[in-house]
Amino acid sequence: MRTIKVLACYALVIMLTPLVPVSAQVSDFITIDVPGATASLPRGINPEGDIVGFYGVGAAFPSGFLFQQGVFTDIAVPGALATRPRGINPQGDIVGFYVSGGVSHGFLLVEGSVTTIDVPGASSTQIFGTNPQGDIVGLYSAGGINHGFLLHEGTFSTIDVPGASATVALGINSRGDIVGHYTAAGTTHAFFLDKHGNLSTIDAPGASATIAVGINQRGDVVGQYTAAGTTHGFLLDNHGSFTTIDVPGATSTAAQGINARGDIVGTYVTGGVTHGFLAR
Image (cartoon, rainbow, N blue to C red):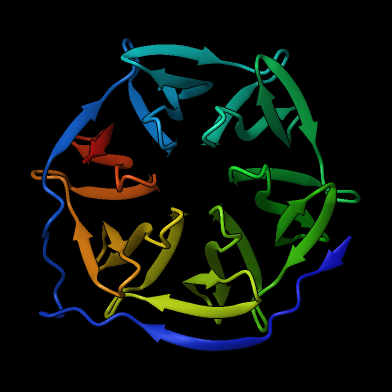
């Protein structure tokens, strides 16, 4: 295992006008609910529009799903207590993690075949994203600390933001740019790490926490931030324009994934129920 060297670290503070975020531009929302589920949580979308995520039945979240051409298909790692698909690339390869024996393990699902992926020496491994080249990002725990990681051509690289108490890598695009979040001095910040090792922090003004979750090949980033106790989704496009994403009538909204066409998936809560959404 090696450590990714961060060449530069600087703050990119996203300014909103007005400072109280409002919804703009993103308005065409389609609800995605798994039939019979009490909660539906889409997490990733590829250029073909295939969506992966997981769902709840009562208090349990046993299985994941693939939503493809209007059809839901269950995804469950054999023998696992819970399966959490998190990302899908253009080839249809699915990544995520599953829980077995109280331990989280990463997985790669290719044409129905499941491969377990565990970072060597880690007490747990969770995978969140993959790109067309098959690079994988996620987190692993060791010594009670969460570290981000990149798996590229069979080699694991640790991603730790300098000075952070925890780092999580959540999304990667075809260029090798990585997004995620880190915790420093008790505050959660989003980060953008380009393929050259240059690191930028992304903080929504007035937010108590900002998390970047997905990035497409153009460099558009989606995620969520919390301000005044409410969670909002966001889109930060590759020109630096910031848009808040709020599903109308929802008490909270979180953006989770974006594809090359700009389609966004995520979740919203209304009436205490979590629903998935697709925004075009």
